[in-house]
Length: 217
Length: 307
Image (cartoon, rainbow over all chains, first blue to last red; front, side, top):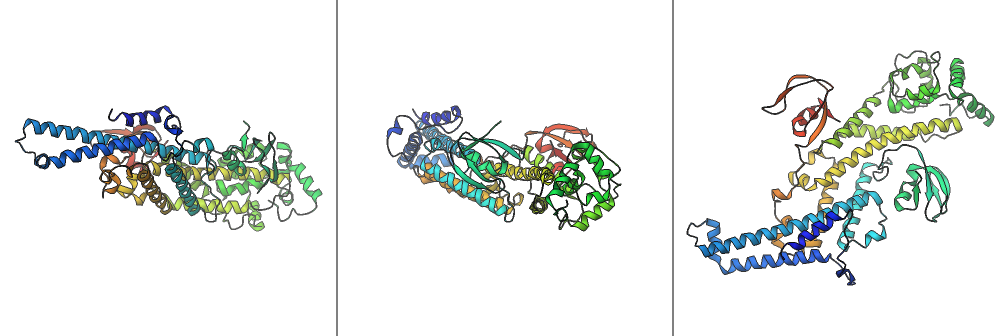
């Protein structure tokens, strides 16, 4: 049925806290470059546009009469016009739904970018289309650039400290073996799995985002 | 404070650590011993004086701090309070200047406190207002400079545990100020993202700083490209609203200026006209719950603040 797919898309967004998955049936195909539902809606829109164009090209005079609000509209022509208007609104609505869908997805990507930074978790990557991954990277670049323009001689990094700092040092537990790293203030730290360290918050912030260490609360 | 003079034997440092870091009692003792003592050991008061850069209490006309013996906890608590000033004597201040602990910092020009407060207010306003507020170039520049200044001071080597203790407090305060600044900028970025089409189409560049405008443009272009690839490539071009010269009004998300906000008035008015028809008596320092558009102008001239 017309317009059902678009509604489906919006509902998907609503029921998912984060990005919804692809349709199960279609994700079997190897090369997915697009969410199948989005594609379907696109096809629908194209078809609607075609139909409108067809009707218009068949009845050029109708088009003129709509434009000039000819009082001598007979009933049949009025029917045609109504059909056109409904069709048109249907199409506009589809476009609107699609845009809203894509925009919300983009917004959720923004949130992801702030929360997880450069390292996108693998399980999320599966849910994204290539276009979205490109967008995500461009978005990160943009934040980076803004960051740089802010702080030429200043180490203000907007992507760290998303919560107000309560302590200078935090206790972290290492979740993955990461070898030995050099931290600017704490010096050499051996990140061995299941050990805990007391480290400067600003130093380990990026490690927390990558999921290598977790804060012990 | 005594980085320059304290560089003697490690033994001496150890001693200093014991005498001035054993709680209130010792701090009192250190205080009574007077100025000579301060040449050798760092007391909390010494360190607090460095904190002045952040909180910037007024150092003029101070009483002799030494006689006002107070315990250490209160000294730290009083960072913000008025009586913090009583910890610093004039001679002490002079000594500080001589020692050039505060390199490049003019002690008599302590307006920092005000700026931090302003930043705080700015953050609150920005966070609670539905619309993007004008970017405060001067204030942000000043705060950034202050932070830079402080960071440079914190580059000084840390010698002993005493030093480290105060160093950490200092650093913590700095982190807090930095957080406020970052939070302000982030809040703005978030709003810009939400209203990017509105900003670009209505040309609100005057509200944004240059880097922010750059950011908004790039974001807009990226989004356009993304929509293009994701959907507009698959449907007829004439249907793409971004291809038209002007976006339709309904495509632009306008910030909801009738959103209700909590506002505190800093001035009292006998009769204040919210709109043409609605007026009321406004008391100073009272908090009101109003539509944003009603207090927009008062906010701009600084007669009201959001909470």
